[in-house]
Image (cartoon, rainbow over all chains, first blue to last red; front, side):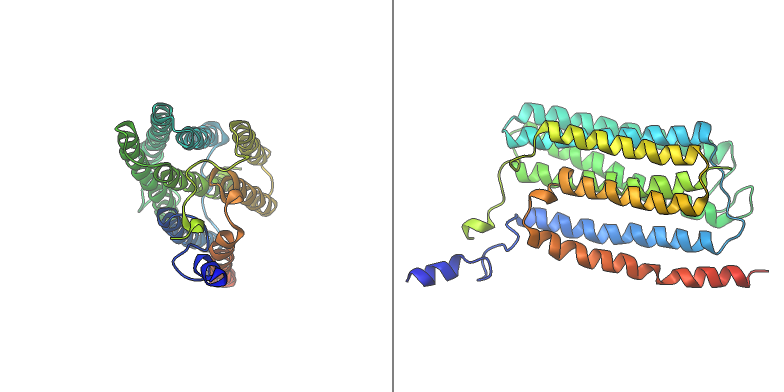
Length: 208
Length: 106
């Protein structure tokens, strides 16, 4: 009987999780992996186009463009830290602090989107770069730049809304630690993607 | 569901705010190193290699500490990442064609 009981509780016997995590967290990890491949495909397409084009433009001056995008990076990195603190607070059952840290994360996220929009508007209005045309006659530059940064900004925007829902629920006594942790996974992933977009799109395009 | 199947209801042991702050500072430093390379106008090929290395290190830090992967069971990482790395590397099969089409341009 003892061996039978042992078999039933084995992680390989079915009914248990071999990964010892909840289904929500596992689901978010699977989503993150698939989204990771989406962004990789876009960055590989960008790499392909850039390598096959001898006259690919490198339009970003160190000042102000790179400094500006560096500030955006620091804002996003800081948002990850506040999100970590939110998850940490929730693990101690401190819902009030959790809401405060999530709101701080949302503020950083919203700040990132605002800075990004300022940069986009500068490029569109002053530099005349659009998704379809630019002064350097390499329309694919705009297509890849706005495509990749646009998809990332969409993720940030959705993340801010997602965190808003989580903060609202946590404040009302709903949601568990796992729900906050899962929303944190999504937010950190958005940060992680930017860790590749920033060097490959911006730093590799500094005007020499 | 067995006892093993329950999700942890609290932060993993060892994950302290001090540790997270140190990881964050590490990420900031690596970011500034990347920006410094751009400021120095490092040759593109060398810069690309270093940037990919630094970005992968930063991604690993975020996944390990901020996303708690360091504190999960190894089986989770083993089922998620080897296939992802393989898929990502497989995508670079198009690179030789990019070089070929560059040579074909007038």
